[in-house]
Image: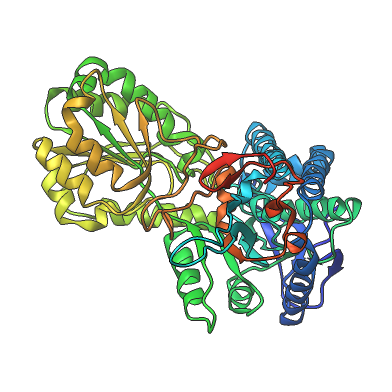
Length: 526
């Protein structure tokens, strides 16, 4: 049941006078529930609870945290059709997408539960003492990852479940032993409250400390700003625009005690079409990419917004087929009138650039908030000279860059901003283009071979990040179990009594975890 209130730990609260509603973009009307924006007092109360909860939650066992994470997954599933219906009404996304994203959210939670049950994720390392070493004795030094403290997570507009209230950032932070305060996204506050209620139920059932999780409503930026500036908050997780992520990054850096901001931001995900592939399969590639560009109304951070090839008949044929195929696809609803408005504005800005040609533009009448897909093309030299053409147009928009030769292609790739993904389309020719691959690797966090960038698998090998502005720290991923490393720091104990060490570092290895002992991986006791 949606109340419109904030969760301050396990207590519902609505002390403020500022309220707002979510919006149904399919029906183009406001939804019924009214939400109360968190006040400064409520923000401070949530942070104080989180700081208090951290004192015990940081040392909660892996088994206890796993029970908590699995209970969250169970409670989300128990919300059943109520969650799906609210999700759809607040996002304009279809039921199938809602259920798929719920499944992904549950899978992420259970994956982290498995990770902390095993326990080896702390990367325990032990270098035993050598007291008779010459010329100086060697101390006993032991290291492991420990949690940072309370984390603020900003819900993402385009993934109301998988990147929001109980999404990857929250799941990873809780798994690490960090309490979480979610700044709920105003576009899907009802979805956020339902999921928050599931987390609170799970916390109560598994005896987690009050304050391990809070959910704060906000229609604008004020609540988020106060959270990031609060001295008890120790890190930030964000998925969204470059402008929003950079603002949080700068705000966190200006604190008396700066804190890390792990922001996943803009990306146009360049696709490199090599000559043989275009020659052999230009038409099939065009059909595949028409689907990828319009998938989810282009509202994926991995949408292929830039396609790069060598000028000639084969690329011309690809462009022609892509243009024909993409207008066959019925437009779909965007997440919110504001996102639709931003798409139209950014599209208009791109189309106003000199020497850019429109090759496909869905021009039939559509419903309110439905986005018309557009394909454009431009010469390589024009693209290089005009960095406005390098910017993301969030929606079903893509640009084909026609290069004079392979050298210009390499130059274009090297001059791109950091990206989440890059794709290489090749037919038994990749080894001849080592410079292209190297240039692409230097600009992205993940390279796809003969596929589409849309779709991010949740697995240990996944890197969802990249050089700025794809993310604020390219050393980390926002997806998969390794995303837990964002919310911890390495910590060493020197010459510490064995009985006072955490179980992960004790001689007897009571948890049976894998550890690096004197340079060798082992799960044996010392």
